Image (cartoon, rainbow, N blue to C red):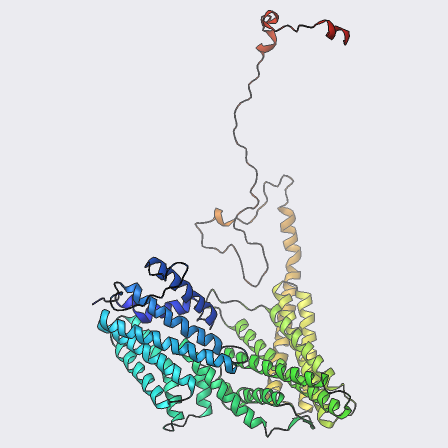
Length: 580
């Protein structure tokens, strides 16, 4: 027997650490495949198991060759390289073509071959735990191959269940890290098992359950997600066949391109997740991810529309319909952009008011909210200009323009409020007081307009709270300004009395290195701009001792002997005398 080294270096731990450290944490299968190739090269070289020089001579790994653990690693990483190459083809942006899919299935078949060999060698050379893990690994690879080929669902189900049973048993023993890894494997296999049961008719998997599975993470789920996306794309294509028009603000625009229909339908399905009954249970990160997918779908629809517009020729009716559809899709995209920026504002507000418990958490400053409201004002202006660009405007478009104007007014009030808060933190009382008063007048005007137009109750409530906060903060700033003005002569007299011509009596705040025995911050408040007093920089010049200067006074009084008799005399001939 050749037991693999205990649990910390078991197969599951080895693969998990390799996958997380070399690309699969972010779904980068290309990087992981390159790592497997480099790892195999190092193993072949260190084991002196190369395939000849010059001419390739294949050397098979058999039971007699396996004399240490690294030979098993050779087989394992070869299977991983084939599997990661298949997953790399599966993760292509537009999906694999027919030719690429044949290559993908070939790589999965190669991974199954090496995984089966690995299981066989571990059963002979490894201990019982290693043998069980290798059997589960081989079953998982076989299930992946059948899952991708869309056939023999009962056999795929049997392989996935076999792998799950092994991991469930292994999760009961070993250290805590190994138990956690086995539980993760079981959770990753569960969606594939449920999908196989759904395909053979023993279970009815709902669309909401598919979306919940899509939110899960893990390398074992990437193939399932790719398959799920392909199934949903096919369902959208069938559903898009009945979608002939796009409705927007009383207009109906025909859709003739199939890709445009599928893209718009995908975006509308994602919008249902944001505005549906389960929207409140979604986290902020999940909602932002859904917004990104919506933007991608609408941008794809716009690119299809504009390509159709470029190839439409001189047909005026077709051009008008395509221009109207492009305008409608752009307007909906602008609405979703405003909603996303409002979500970012709510996240920033929660961080601004929440107490910072984690020191590594970034503090939200009022300037960031001012920047977000600048974006919202720009988005609202662009959307309003887009809606008002047409000639024949319907009542729905007029009411939508009025709604954009009301939103813009409320955004201006919010921006003015946080700009005042920024000036307040900087100690500029007069500017902060003026901005709070301006924000209050804008908020009251927006509140009055919303109440007249029967706006949303949530927006009205927010504006009422904003009016109260503007009033209270303006009073606070006024009081602080008066107090500072009253204390100004006293502070001035203190400063004048402390003035010294020599500067010896000048009192300055000590640096951190001078008061290490006292617990006092040298940085100050995070929201107030100030220079931290840690150490003087650049450091001051200091006098340093140096070697004394020696003056040789006796040199000028010494009489040296003559050396002319020792000097070589220059002998000159007759010709040299002529040229003198």
